[in-house]
Amino acid sequence: RSRELGGGRQSWFDPAMHAHVVEQIRLEHDLRGALSRGEGLWVAYQPIVEMVTGGLAGFEALVRWTHPERGNIPPGVFIPIAESTGLVVALGSWVLREACRQIADWQDKRAPGSAPLFMSVNLSARQLSDPGFVEVVREVLRETKVEPAWLKLELTESAVMDKAEQSIRLLQDLRTLGIKLSIDDFGTGYSSLSYLHKLPIDSLKVDRSFVSAMHHSEENRAIVRIIMDLARLLGFDVIAEGIETSADANLLRALACDYGQGYHFARPLPPADAEKLLGGELPWQAPW
Ligand code: C2E
Ligand code: MG
Ligand code: MG
Ligand code: MG
Image (cartoon, rainbow, N blue to C red; front, side):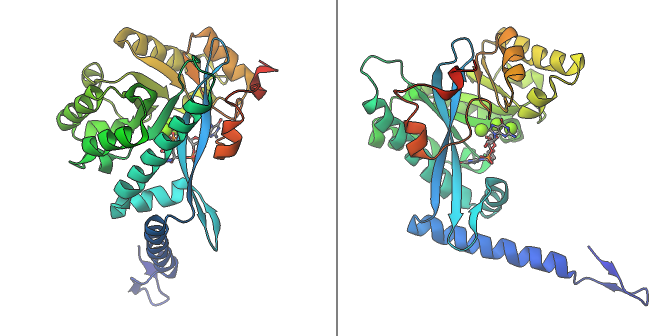
């Protein structure tokens, strides 16, 4: 961007932009350090609830970065940096291993015979185009002794549609391992409907923008209903994200939505707090 100077000349040096670039470079440097030292990175776990019963069905692993000087840096800030620098491949493997280790540990602690919980892990487009990715997943499953069926990978529409044919092959390889696949933030990207039915996936995650718009108008409710119908037609489960009120939850239950996630149930939690939900009472079942 350029700035007009008094004399009508242009300066290509924009201080605000310069500061932004310096900031990005510094964060990239710090993130690289955090990854190599294993410092400051941790995973929060947000419960995913079975809508009919209100029972705990699983968790979504959401990466967190507590910077030594600046405190928590939101994923919306550091994930794009990790994406653009390729660091997201190492970061993503780290999250995958950590989340698998965690679900294996929790599964051990649960009463024998209780239905297994699933663990959802977000993937970036970069990880999908990494030729070693399937091997990484296989190795992590082996090392952590996680049943493939407990693991669900979340991919965005754009990550998949970018190179649709190539992605479909990779998704098939992943599914051959026995893990589950889900399209995240569904409805915000541009999935081609002609590809959607070819995707070897198990579920659609309705983006929270549709969920929060539901109570505004009948049209918005119709959009959510159509996504549900489409999912059912194609044999996918539906997970709604961003459920913030009991009204949202009730509407979604009336639409026979399978799973839900959002502040109405619980925020993403530090591991110790998430663990308390395993055996005990679920705080959201009282007002259920
Ligand atoms: P996402 O995968 O769509 O995750 C859901 C986001 O919505 C999370 O934000 C979560 O905290 C937030 N959320 C959950 N319930 C509610 C609600 O009721 N209301 C509102 N307003 N928000 C809710 P978070 O943790 O900030 O993560 C943002 C995004 O960063 C994620 O969106 C995902 O795309 C990305 N991300 C997070 N962890 C990872 C990771 O390990 N790897 C990759 N590649 N991306 C990640
Ligand atoms: Mg997600
Ligand atoms: Mg999402
Ligand atoms: Mg979303």
